[in-house]
Image 1 (cartoon, rainbow, N blue to C red):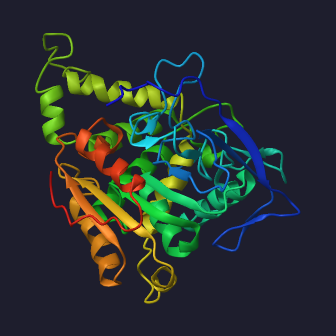
Image 2 (cartoon, one colour; image 1 turned 120 degrees about the vertical axis):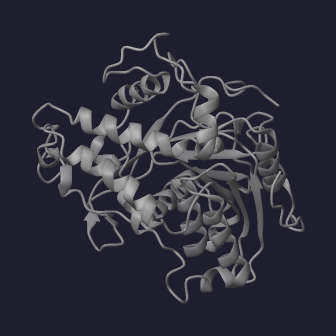
Length: 385
């Protein structure tokens, strides 16, 4: 198995304007954006019949930089374990596309972008988004790149939700859909975690009703707290115990209220580094999209998919308690009840929700086998490695 960071070398993030005043993006809500720029990366080569494209949908705090290296970076793209020559998504064979989603803050239009009508950052005037709006922009980028049909769409967590929405709404766009560590409907607990994170941001004294950029400030405390709390949900108790236990940060206790335990230092570090790469407004908007996501709600939700079936692979991790295995089972049950081709695997991994980003041989081998198989290939309903 190739090592983390091997293979692709230096890659480039590009930007393209996909919507403008003559061709605005009409959102699910009915509101529209007269200017949408998208940041994206590609790896590999599109073949002559344009049949080898795989689209990667990123999670909440991800971006277009999924694999390879940017000059000066100390670590490669966020899914370099998955994408590259000889890897699960083999760029010697596949043409891989990854974009920063609408509402993001790494080159794609979002609430921190300039509103062309005011020449000021959008702030909370930016319209609320829906999972289908992400898909609309992904499809526009495919069109721009000359990709008429995907071999597969692949995503983890929020990325998996985008893949599910895409396959349900536009099944003719793809052959395969890979949905990893995702959910089709957040539980009250999931919504609660996001609600507390948003509240921490909005109650920060530097939030200023979302106009903090105009005042040259930032709700750093609130955003760091939101990240710290979320990061707890991305790990498992077993993973935390193995990594930190009750170890002290500096080898001895100060018996105070500062950072005393190693796990406290870890969370503080996660909060601090997050401030340099993510926007507080994007955090608000993207977490809210997840709260409202419920693609199976309508009685006719799967009608289009039944007429033009997509082959699904759904993967969960047994220690993931943010989107537990039951979330994936619900997706599988809904698809199977509609007599759609779906394969499922629950992978043994002690590291919680973030397992989808890690080097777990059985997980990567499962994805590789699925995307490389022909259409006659079927998994049995694996339960657990």
